[in-house]
Every structure is written in structure tokens, then in C-alpha cells.
Length: 560
Image 1 (cartoon, rainbow, N blue to C red):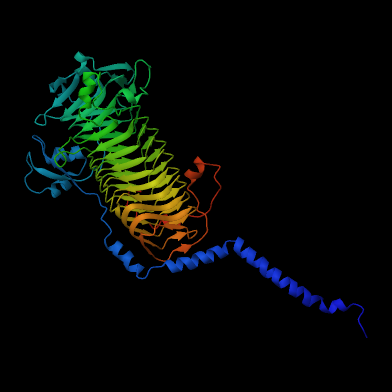
Image 2 (tube, rainbow, N blue to C red; image 1 turned 60 degrees about the vertical axis):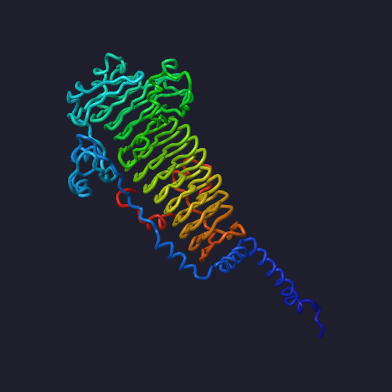
């Protein structure tokens, strides 16, 4: 019998012949569009890049990892000073100071001094000794001196105003409000307390090519719970023009602590050759460091003088440089804010060593948030936040070596972390988000730097190494969302291993020498910290916990 519907017998085979190719084609399209094909190619390429013997290269780096403990500074004892008075001056335990310097300590002896370990305490009040101090006038600048051979003078702004009344150098203009009208310098065996107990606001008179300064030399100054600002009589308010000279605060070869205070609209970068400058202002400017709030060692006295201090819970804003040190040793910078300054937020400069820089915020500064430069070594930079600065977030520059950057957050800067011509530094456990250029940039013959366990998200470059930089260990980093996870140009002996990346996006110059270990390719977004999202609410919400990365870091106990 012949079927009336012959197609029924061939329907299923025909459909299979048609459906199978379509299914295979659809799977291929899905496989490619889903990114799995690209990921497979990337993983294959990743495996091909692995360099034979790469673990030995990592081990060699680890064996030569630097010691990041803070070191000592050297100080030559002055006539009249003892270990007891020096321990108080430098804020260190007397027994510890004695154990570091056994034997007889006499004037002229060079001793080792560890970093400051506690802030100054305010004196009970003026002790009356200031009346025996010598007041000298140099081109209109007042120098108040008390020899170390004489008893220590403890004083305040009201007490100092009475001493300087013949020169009308300090005026009271309101309840707990004073104005310094000319440059003054408190020197040698004097402790000046500028605290909320007597002064809530201190103004430093400032104008065109003439300004006051609160200066000190070889003495102790405590600024606590007080606002200090420039005052321009013609504007009846702060001096907003740093270009023609402006009032400043400076300590030379001594100690200056600032706690719970605000210092603003201070400092200038005025060239020394300026003509028409007020003689008193010119005299004050001869020792430099007029940038805002400064700590300075005199030229040619490194190893025999120290400038140090403790700076906590204070704000530095609208200064030429927020705060600056030149030869600073063992300074603690803790929980401060540096914002809206003309150039840098905080600038440890020229041999500023052994600092603890922790818990600070650097934002909206005209150049860099934090920059260490010219042989600034053995500093611990930990738990800081730097964002929305015009150039870079945190910079190690010009032979600044043996520094530890740990647990910092930097975002929306040109480059978030920069190592420029500096060596033997470690960046570990830091977070970088949305740089305009690079998460981490290493250049200008930098060598022997360790980039480990950081989060680098977004921007053109995750890690960018160039310009004759050598010996970089990059391991354990999470690099996601950058157009180039790794780019090198003029880089030698870079080890890139055990990192997590979201694609095989490398740009390696032909002559560069790199060692690749196995890296993980994983396309998962990273959650920015709440502060990043809060400052940019339009940013898409991302997801990934940073806890597993951060909790495994060897943070310095008690300082994170």
C-alpha cells in the first residue's frame, strides 16, 4: 500500500540535517560573543609566555627584599644639652636614647636619635624665664634667643606679645585671637605653646613683598587646637596671592608639633632675587622653606642637626605647599588632610627620612598629593588616601629609596602611584582606581622595586614600566579594566607572575627583557571602596571583595 504522505518518513532526517549545522553555528557564535573563545586564546597565549625557571627569579627577588624598618638620625650635642633634655626634645624614651649612645655624652658628641614616638606636651604655662631671653633685630626680623646653658623658657603667644611690645610685633585683635605683624623667630632653649588654651586663631600679616612669619630655630613649638592663617589688611581676610610673597610658618633645626589645627593660605614660591622686597621679609626668607608650613635642616648640617615633629589631626589647605620638610627625620604625619594647595599636598624633600605617614588624605592639590623626593628614604607610607589631584597621587622621586607603601588608596589622579628614578621600594596591598594614565608607573632608571598584591583597576595602563627601569617584581596583583594590563618600553628584568588579569593585553617593546610566570585570566569586576563610589555616584556598581587581598598583607602593627 502506498502512503498518501511520503514526506512524513523523511521529515526527521531532513530536520536533523538542517538543525545540526545551525546549532553548531549558533554555538560557535555564542562561544565567540561570550568571550570564552577569546579567553581560551588568551589562556593559551598566557601559557606560552611562561618562562622556564621563573620561580628561581621570584626567589632571587624575595631573598634580596629590603629591610623597611625606620632608621636613626644623627645629632651633635650642643653646649648645655643633656640626654635627658634631648630625650624630651626629640620625644623619645631616655633609657632607649641612652642605650643607643653608651658612654659619656658631652657637647660635640654625635649621637643616634630614633624617630619621634610621642607628641609634645604643653607646658603648664609661662615660667617667667622668657624675660631673661635676648631679643635681637636683624633687618627688621626679631630673634628671641635663650641659651641652652640657661634654664628652658616656656612661653605662649600672649607672653611673647608682652616681651615684644616695644616693637608692636604681636597684637590681640579679639578674644583668643592674635596677629603677628612682622617676622619673628623663637630660638634655642625655648618651648612656645600656641594652643587653644590661649589662642584660638593666629593671623600672620601678609601683603605685597612683605609678610610676617612664625619662625623657630633649634627650639620647640607646639601648635594645638589653633587656626593659623595669613591676613591681608587690604583684603580684610586671607592673602590669596602666593605670587608676591606671603606669610609662612617654619622650624629650622628643631621640633615643631601640630595637632588638631588648621593652617591655610600660607607660603610662597617667590624667587630669592625679587627686588623691592621688605627687608624684614627678605631676612626671614634667607633660610628658605617659605612654602607654607615647613621643617628644615640648615644647609651643610645634615648629621649634626635634626628637624622633627609630630603632626596629627590637622588640615593644610590653600598653602603654596601644604606642608614641607627638608632633611626632616622621624616625623609622624597622622590622620591629616592636605587639600587645595597650589602645588603639593605634602612634600618630604631632600633627605627627609624615617617618617611615618599614615591615615592622611591628599586631594585636589595643584600637582601631586604626596611626593617624596631627593634621597628621602626609609619612610613608611600606609593607609593614606590620595585622589583628584591634578597630576599624581603618591610619588617617590629622585633617588628616594627603601620606602614601604602599604594599604594606600589612590584614585582619579593622572598616575595613581609613581616611582621615578628611585629604587628598593615596595608597593604592597595598595588600591588604584580610574587613573587618567597608569595605576603604577615606574620610570627613569628606577631599579629593584617590588609591586605585590595591589589592586589596579581602570585606566590606559595597569602597570607601566619604561625608560631604562630594571629589576621589577610584579606578583599577586589584580589588574582589571585597564586597556593594557602591562606595558614596557626600555625595561629589563621584569618578573610578571601570579597576577590576576582580565585579558592578555600586554604591550612589550621588542628589546625589553621580561620573565613571565603563570598568570590567571579572570573577567570579574572589582568593587571600589565606598569612598570612590561616594565621590562618583554615576559610576556603575562593581562587585568583588577586596578582603582576601588586604587581610593577608603584613601591615606594620599599630600603624594601619
